[in-house]
Length: 313
Ligand SMILES: NC(=O)CC[C@H](N)C(=O)O
Image (cartoon, rainbow, N blue to C red):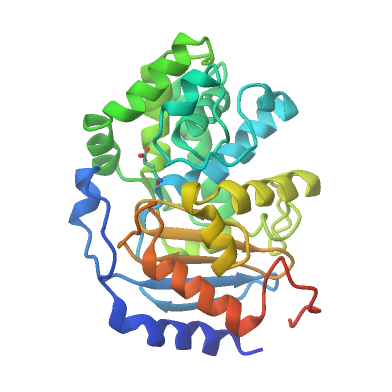
C-alpha cells in the first residue's frame, strides 16, 4: 500500500475545503490561528512518517494532551485512578457541569474537562505544579524524540484568563473532596498541558505506543503495558470526541482524540498513528476537515477496528 500517495491524495481532495468549520474563539489565543492550515502525518511501526500540507507546523494540541495525561496518571496510581474518574461516555459537551452534581463529583470519563482535571490532579500527585509540568515535558520530548517540544505560554495564559468554566468544574470537584491538590495548582498544570504545541509529525511519532501495545515500536520505549494501551484506545473510541464520539466511530472507525486547536490523533491498532490538523471545528469541538481526512484515509486503507480484514501492511 502506498501510504504517501494515500496521505497526499487525501490532502489534495480536501484542500478546497480549508477554512470550513469554526475555530475555537473562547480561548482568544486560538482565534489568532490561520483557519486555512491543514496538515496530515501518518507514522508506522517501521519508523516511517508520511506527511502532507502543514504537517511540520506546531499547533495547540489542547485536549489531545488528555491521552498523555491519562497514561501518566495511570502510571502513578494504577487502577486506583478509576475510583476518582469513570469510564463511560458522557453524551454531553466537553465542558458540561450537569452530571457532576448528580454523580457526586465523579466525572464520567478522563477526557471530558472535569475528568481531565481529576486526571491531571492525580498526575501532579504529591509534587509541585512546576515539577509535574517539567516531568510532562521531558516525557513528551523523549517520546517525540524532539527536545524542542514545549507549551505555548500565550495560549496557557489566554486560557487561564478566560477559564471560568474550568474553574467552576475544578471548584465543584474540590467541594466534593475529589482533588488532592489546591484548585489553582491543578489548573495551572491543566492549562499548560492543554497549551502544548506540537506538529502533526511530532504527535504521530510520540503516540505510537497507542497502536502498538504500549511500546513505541521504533525506539522500544515502553509507555504502558499492552492491556493499559488497549484500555486507553477503548476510552478514546467511546469518549474521545465527547458528544460526537458515536459519529466519529461511525465515520472513521478507529480510536481518536480531538482537541479544540483543530488537531485529531487517531490510533489504528497494529498499523499506524495518524495526526491531522485543521482549526475549523464542528459543534462538538472536533476538527471538521480533520475528521473528513481520517474518514478518507480509513476508507482508502480499509483500516477499521470493526473490520476483520487481514493487515495490508
Ligand atoms: N476539547 C478541548 O480541546 C478543550 C480543552 C480546553 N483547553 C478546555 O479546557 O476548554
